[in-house]
Amino acid sequence: MSRLTPSSSSAISVARTGTVRLADVLAALTYALDLTEGQRPGHTLRSTLLAMRLGELAGLDREQLSALYYAALLKDSGCSSNAARMSALFGSPDQELKRNMRLVDWHDRWKLAMRTARSCGVGLNPYNRIRHFLMVAQTPTLTREIIQTRCERGAQIASVLGFPAATSEAILYVDEHWCGLGHPFGLSGSDIPILSRIILLAQTVEAYWSEHGTKAAVEMARKRRGTWFDPALVGHLESIRRDHEWWGRLADIERIGESVVALEPGSVPMVATDERLDRIAFAFAAVIDAKTPFTARHSSNVARYAVAIAGTLGVDRTASRDLLRAGLLHDIGKLGVSNRILDKPAKLTEEEFGEIRKHPTWTLEILDHVAAFRHFAPDAARHHERLDGRGYPWRLAGDQLTFTARVLAVSDVYEALTATRPYREGLTVAKVIDIMARDRGTAFDSTIFDAAVALAEGGTFASLAQVTENGFDSLQSLVPATSRHLATAHVA
Image (cartoon, rainbow, N blue to C red; front, side, top):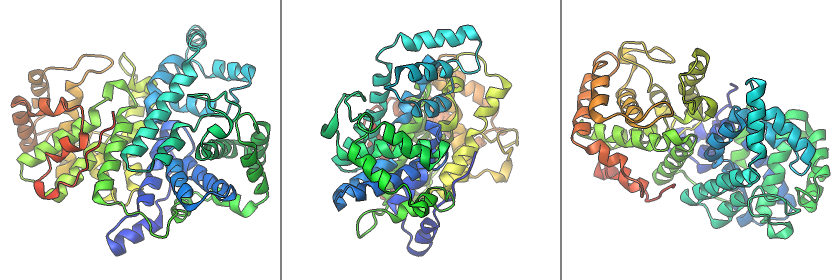
């Protein structure tokens, strides 16, 4: 998997001022959204550059450009919520499926049918390929439902992060088409918010540009003028088609993050305060957990258990906050794993388990892009390592594993065993403790394990797992009082 280079401006900002720009954090985290959508690294960043150029050419004012900027960065934040259903119906890896389907013109029924047929049951035998194609064909509302789920989820996340209504609205209507045949509501023409129209054109052009180059991308936009796209916006796109220097910036993967951060509207950059960072961590935990129904509460529960364990062991406020964020984001690398593997109801093959083993590496790469999270990225990624060196993927041992990594290892396994998975029901507390006790001192730190057992047997973990609303409040109550700056918010 290709790496994106973290914005150097982010590192300089942290070093000199102790602060982080909100744009830096969101721009870095778009790497995770590109993974989920099966897009080439930098897709969201390039789409943002395109959207902002089109917005300026369309004469948007500063307030509109600001709303557009954050909508473009968060446009795919709801994308994990439809991954499980798409993978189950099509019988194919969801990332590859999403990438392929983004390139087809839905209004050309013949081409859509052909692309759908080729995308069903990838890697399966002919019988199962036909079976999945018929499943898709017999679900006439499939496209609308899948898009509605994604768009509504993304709009909700933008709202939870505190962005204006125009940002959420832009995400909600991003797949509406000029001719009225888009989804999920069938809006047409100027009834579609201008920001949504811009992002739709920008992200579709980027997908074609990445696969086929500028000429093909502009030609695609011309063909869909008046059907998918606002004709006036296509005109603005055509006006820059020969600006080779500008298009070259899209190909500069080393500096694309800097280019996007430099475009942040407003005279004063928005700062990623502790409250905003907590909101972002909680929101992206919701993105992670939405990937599969079998991990719907996993990240938030792991964070709750980890902070509760740390609290009983006298951990200070700064470490508790870092542990909270690390727990919420420890599985962000799973956004790169196919749902055909994550949701498989049978035993995984060695090849499939090999794909699962990659997710800690992806967690490290993603969090290492974020200056505000970089210091705990290795610990968050090492939640499958063991004290005896028999974990994965790095086979670290002993003193190579910090307190945070050890707490997350215990919390992660406890949550996974008590939760229902595709191949089994959740286990009882007694059974889980019995299983984990066999690895006390070999996989798990003895002191941390004993603290977890006390919390589990005392009912604390069960109470935390039952929390279904006010996610920030429930986590806030576990952090030492002097560090309670978490805002009340909830992603359903």
